[in-house]
Image 1 (cartoon, rainbow, N blue to C red):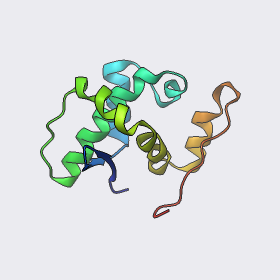
Image 2: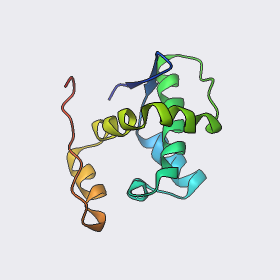
Image 3: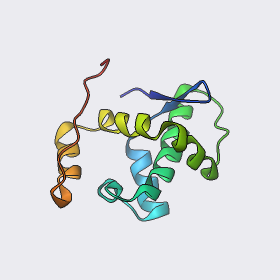
Image 4: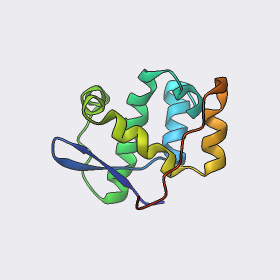
Length: 112
């Protein structure tokens, strides 16, 4: 899966979620994707590692710090949350979001 982009201060930032992001979330923050539901603070490291990996794949310099994630999410939280399901198979998304009786997230088809 290629990178997706979010817009922050009129700049398209590359984002990539996958193994690296999941590994770093577990290793550095002791959280998994299931922990995202209802825990807004977990989106900060999730975005950080997704941006870090996206920049690496896109061959761009990564200039952000973990502390910057609050400001970036303030501007594009819903944009970021909307693209998360695009990186995972539908059955994984359904399993992650069924916890606690929550309705499953809808996975958008690429290009839509």
